[in-house]
Image 1 (cartoon, rainbow over the protein chains, first blue to last red):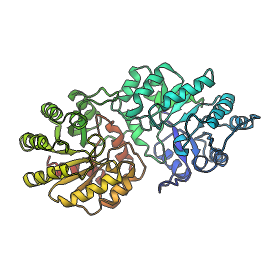
Image 2 (cartoon, rainbow over the protein chains, first blue to last red):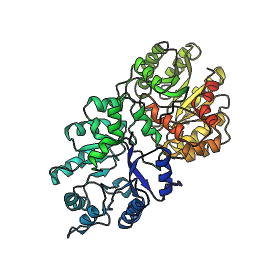
Image 3 (tube, rainbow over the protein chains, first blue to last red):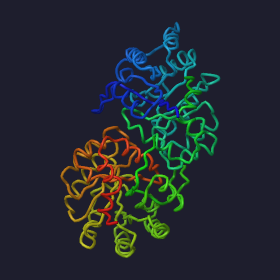
Image 4 (cartoon, rainbow over the protein chains, first blue to last red):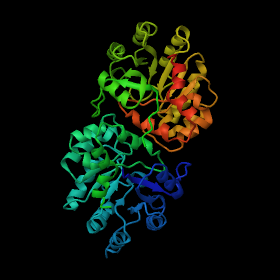
Length: 245
Length: 251
């Protein structure tokens, strides 16, 4: 069975002592027979997004399993007037844009974020990956994106746990472009509920490796009562379709 | 790729409703989830007792403990209701064969610190009348972990389980547990930092770590996955999954 992990980040972890290096990510991929991994460098999150994106791209040359994900730090970004950044993101082969308002401390109602939406997302039409830091975040985010981009691009929210599940379900049922990952998807009957509500094509394996253990997310899918076809959608099929990889 | 350990004892579980979209909450649902995750025995506390009505919740839990042979219980005591809690202790501890310990909370749902006077009164009584009783404390921060370390030293004839082992602040929680023989780490939380179990094993020893899941709030498969993924020995895994609990709860 193909396994694609859509939530991996490598580099250096400045906020806690942990080996999250690229070789460590490769070790996790090897250990668990992960076919492909959507990855980016922490350098682009904590330090400089352009250097981080370069580092991410360089790993794709080292390991064909890596699918590069771009990031932009809106605290440094004020526009892409000539479409240069959008062009380079697409031509470099990035498959999605991932943002980190939780770590970087910016709100959704933030002009530079609107700039990213109206220039980079609008011009690249890449899927946008975001965390879920608070109740109402998904609701707000979908509203902002819908107002600015029609038809809206795929949105992927990471870190959905029991506290965010009702919000995620409401939004996923009404917005088929809204998706989630499995990294913190933790309710005992969550996969069965997602399936019953017709949203099994909107959830993808994401683990947070190598910072997180891989097996908590994986075993939760494996030990669910979903059938093999539904499990394979979560493990790979949905990611192939949603992220066009 | 799925490794199924032969036997697991889950020392941190709940019975009752949650204010989240979780519907597998009947005794039969719990039993089915246990089977899917190779869990033989489970020690439950009442959700209702913790978040709302102690007396009604404890009674509801006591009623279902005989439904399946693998079900056991903790009685919950609320330090905002001291006299009533003593009546609950009297009613269940020693009088219900499947009530094996106490579940005590801290902060959030009860708005009291872990080391509040009410908890200490309960522990004094329990230590005198039921020495060796396992006491599961909710412990989701370094502060709560340090408070529990102090409480464990103060009540050496009780066995304390540090529920959630400090959450994201697990490193401090592990560090403050070193060398306290009656303090055990219980692993369930929404934090899956790779390396945390290895760290805990290296600092307090696998003999002081227990598997718990927080079911029905959380999927036991996540914590099973964490133990399976950790780079520890098979012997350590078996201690965490069941051997320590067998000894502590006298199964």
